[in-house]
Length: 136
Image 1: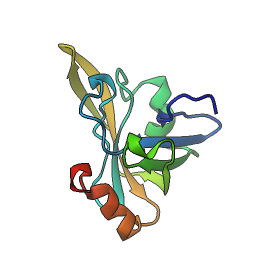
Image 2: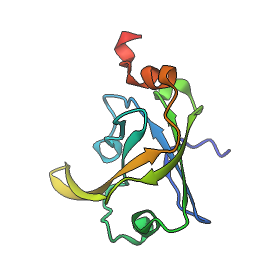
Image 3: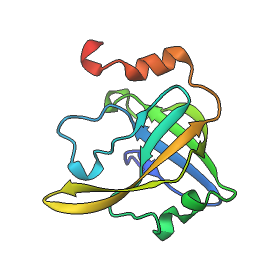
Image 4: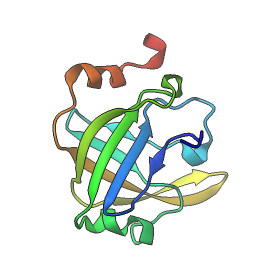
């Protein structure tokens, strides 16, 4: 490990691990304040990096979903250090959606994907992520 923060995603060798910090700090930079969220124990809504469009080369394997192994890892907050929970294997639900976010007064493209989680998230773990940090 090189000491850097783990986060984001990397598509390589037909795999795409996705690392998400669920509750982001309030003072986090707008450029990385992605709106990733569980919609249910079976569906996860995820945002690509900023300045990406559906036709971006980086996203083509996910958009086309051909022989790519997508795995989701989530931690509740940065207070958990570098430990992530393995959530499971993902497959796309429907077509990705092109969105635009205003950052520093400029419109930035970003792509929203909805994923089906192969096996429902354990109820206790799901509830842990759903509880707000200030309620703990």
